[in-house]
Structures are given as structure tokens and as C-alpha cells.
Image 1 (cartoon, rainbow, N blue to C red):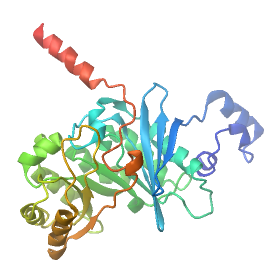
Image 2 (image 1 turned 60 degrees about the vertical axis):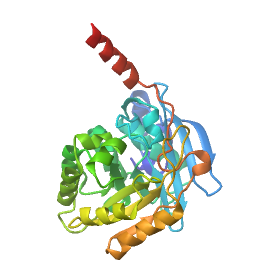
Image 3 (image 1 turned 135 degrees about the horizontal axis):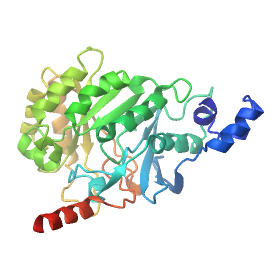
Length: 332
């Protein structure tokens, strides 16, 4: 594990502290095969994005965001996404399948190697966020196994507070997540303060409405040592009014929380506009005055379509084909 994950070695014969017989046997029965790098682009702000081709021809995107004192890797969990949030470019790509464990952890392997990370030196990637393409909790088992490698001292050795899973709110899986991972950091894509609006922005809300989701967040943070980060994309004239901010304050009462305000990142055909900075600042100040820790996320990687909500990859969409087949069966 150390050879593969910490040193980035992809040849068993190079693992010199293993016996020659074991190295030969490993080379016969196994292979170390990361996703293929199709595109490697860097934004002027230092953000770096990889387009990675998978064995079946699909492609996913992974993004590294460097900041002073930390480096965050944004990892995908599915090829596309089924949730159909209409402010997100990934949703426009449709959905093909869940990523396997090796395809999830392979993104970290590729980025670590490309960024020149070395064992016993300062980490280049200090944080991992499962915020890329897909809904992680709809790929629960594979995501949990990949997270276990992120945390394992023989692999990447990250602390639980430095691995964050972002979800739109798959409540039953959220209730299983703490036990399965020991309580990694949690981020919830909220984006609205009423079920009526959230049903439109995040259709999963029709199955797990806001009140039910917030109760699950309370359960997740019941140990009192952690807070849920609520992500709130700022959409001009949609969810950015002062009354929306005050409603959010009321909604989060009793929930250990902090809020990330995310300026909307446009993509071709997007039906929304970014809130003006004055509206974002006003919204933030209302939350801060109410005692809720709030930050406005700095937009990074926009010139290479690597900002929040812009990841698309190349998805061989099966959802539209599936819908056509279902419609055909119904007609028959």
C-alpha cells in the first residue's frame, strides 16, 4: 500500500523491499492501472483540472485547488449524476454509472503523482472533498471503501476532518455514514429555504424534504464535536433576498452549522444568473449577525470550467435512453 499510494509506484518489480518471488507473483496476478489522463489544464489562479478517461470510454473530471497552507482535491464519485439539479453542469450530462473504488481513489493517485507529492515531505494535497461529479451517497459502498484508503496510515493517512463528503441529502445513507467512516466532515447542498423552491433546484428534496434532511444533520453532529457545512448557491432573484437569509437563520436554529455561500458559476444554457456581489454580502451579513459562521466561497478555476457546478466530463448517458425505453414500454 505504501509503495502504491505514498510513493506512486505503478510497477511491482520496483518495490525493492518485497521479496523477488512476491514481486514476480504480484506482476503475474495484478496490475496497477490508474485512469488515463486525457487533459491536464491549469487556470491562471493555480487551479488545476484533469479529464480522466475510464476503461469503458467515459471520462470524469478532478480538480485541485491550491490555497495558502492547504491544497484541496475535488473528487468525483459517479459518471454523471442522476439528481438533475438544474443549476449544475454535471446534471446536463446525464448519468452512466457509479465509479468503482479504484476509479475514485485513482483520482487521488493521479493528482498526487502529477503534483509531485513525496512521502515525509509537506503534503501537497491536504484535503479531499467528494464534491465532484455525482452524488456520493448513491454510491455508498464504493465511496466508503475509497474513504477508508484516504484515511489509512498505509495509504494517504488523512484525518477525518480533512475528508469532506458533499451530499444533496440522501437521508438513509447519511444516517449510515458516521458509523461507516468514523464521522468524516459533512457538507449538505441546501440552496433553498422552502420545499417549494428546493423541489425545483434539487429534485431529491421531493423524497427527502428540508425538515427531514435537517433532522438527519442533527443526528450526524450529535456528538457535539462537529458541524455541518451547508452549501448555498447564490442565484440572482431566486434565493438571495434578505428575507431568504432570515428564513435560513430560523431554519438552522438548533443545528450545529456553518454556511458556505457559493456565487453561481455559469455554463452554456444555464437558466440562472449569479447574484450581484452586494446581494451576496447583504445575505452573508444577516447570517453573521445571527451568529452563524458564514463565508463566501471564492470562485476558482472558472476559466477552465473547474469551478463549483461546472464539472461535466464526458458521459455516455444511459438515463435518457432508459427514459425512452420506459416510455416505449408504457405505450406498448
